[in-house]
Image (tube, rainbow, N blue to C red; front, side, top):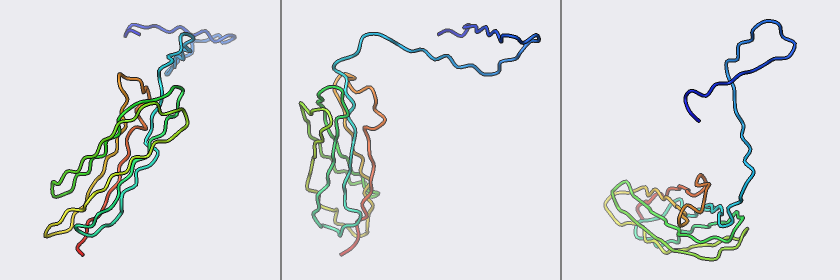
Length: 149
């Protein structure tokens, strides 16, 4: 499309000029289907809502393949506390069939310090070479409050 795209509208039976203030062009593409594309999504991010300092807990990310092809990718979970602590977990997967889920679980020890903290977790699933055209469902966020014993 270019900025000089013109639109002409004829309203049948109308004898006076009609102003069109808004128009929408819908284009339906009929052509080659990309066979290798798939839609990965973060189905669930499970982190403890509250944990005591030094306590060990599991953090878990569930990924689903919404198809239409078999999927491969990488799951990353990053936790950043308001004190600057960073926790990072990552794992790769291959051959995830359409409609199936893959679950990733890691052990995490809550930080020990002189004051409580809040950890903000961000889970992301990525696919190689732009094979996932819908990246709007590839991220999830959750928080954990770290309290004194």
